[in-house]
Image 1 (spheres, rainbow, N blue to C red):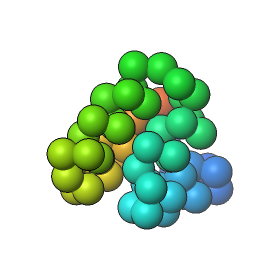
Image 2: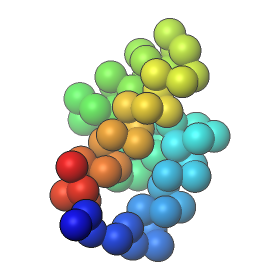
Image 3: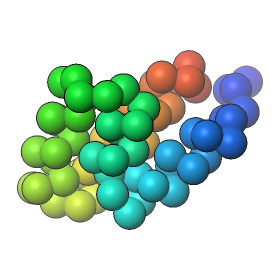
Length: 63
């Protein structure tokens, strides 16, 4: 079974819907994932959201 998200991660998931790069920034800081998410968000909002959700879930071990 997958781990249950902490309250902080739930807030990040909602933030990722509104501002995907901000959610990635709060999770990892300014690293490669942040810049990738900036580019994906510029190309389209949905790819940015999907990538942000992936980064958040990957870091909590749910995948």
